Amino acid sequence: MEIKDYGEKLRSRELKVALKIHSDSRKFFSDFLRAKGFIEIPPVIISSVTDPLNHPTEKALISAGGFSYELTKSMIFHKQMVLNTYDKIFAFSPNIRLEETQKKLTGRHLLEFTQIDLEVKNATREDILRLGEEMFIYAVKNIKEVDGDLLDSVGRVLKEPQAPFERITYGEAYEKYGDEFENKLSSEKSFPFWIIDIPVGQREFYDREDRDRPGILVDYDLVYPEGFGEALSGGEREHEIERIIERIERKGEKTEQFTYYIEFVRNFGLPPSAGFGIGIERFVRFVIGAKRIEDIVPFPKAPGEFYPI
Ligand code: AMP
Ligand code: MG
Image (tube, rainbow, N blue to C red):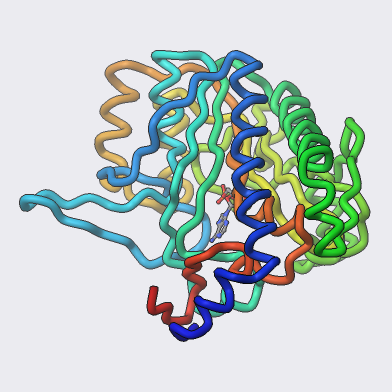
C-alpha cells in the first residue's frame, strides 16, 4: 500500500460500510454476552506467557525496563486464570500474530486483529456450541435490521442461519476432502457449520482430550459458508496440572516456556471450563462479503507486505 491509497480507501463506500458494521458487531456481541451475565475483562497485551499456537509465527518480543515480554497471541491462559474471579468472562482482545508470508494469499490473515475471547467455568462443549449459535444469530439478525440498507448498498445478501448448526466431525471431513476440507466445505455450504472432534495433534495442549476417546479433543471450529473459512475456534480445556504437563510434553514443547502459568495452576488450580475466540475482522468480512480482510480495516497489516501507516 502507498500513501495515496489511504486517501482513496478512507473515502470509499466499502470502508464506510465496514466500519459501521464493525462498530455495530462489537455492540451486538457485547450486548448479547452482558445480557447472559458475562463480565468484560480488560485485554492483556503484553505478558511473559501467551498462546503457543499450533502453527509457526515469529515471536513478537518487547522489552521494558530490562524485562522481556511477548505480545499476546491469545488470552487463553489469562481467561482460564480469571475464572477464579468470575464464572463467565469475555474480552475484546487485540492479538499480534506474526504469520508467515504465505498467509497473505488467504484473504483472512492479519498480523494484528481482535478476538472476542470468552470462557465459561464448568461449561461443556454442548453449552458453548449453543451459546455460539445464539450469539452469532443475534448479531446477524440485529445487523440486518440496523444496517440492512448498507448491506444492500454493497450488494450483500446475508442469510440469517437457524440453530442448531450442522456438525461435521474432523474425521468425516478429512476422509471426504483431505487436507483442503475446510475450504472445500466452506465453499459448498450456505450456512455456518461446526467442525468437531479435532485430533490432538492439530491443536494446542490446553484443549481437553476426550477421556473416552484418546487422541480426540472435545473442541470445535465454526466455519463460515460461501468460502469465507474459519470463524472461531474453541474447546473444553485441560485444567488439571498433571494433564497439562503431560500434554505439553506430548506436544514436544518445553514446560519452561509456561513456567509462570504452571506455577499458578500448581498453587491456585483452575476450574474446568470451555470457551472460544471469534475474530471480529473475519466476522465483518463475512457480513459484508468482502474479498479480502485487509479491505475492511482502515490501517491493515497483512503478512508479507509493508504498510506505511
Ligand atoms: P484461533 O484460536 O487461533 O483459531 O484464533 C481464534 C480466532 O481468531 C480465529 O478463529 C479467527 O477468527 C481469528 N484469527 C486467528 N488468526 C487470525 C489472523 N491472523 N488474522 C485475523 N483473524 C485471525
Ligand atoms: Mg482456529
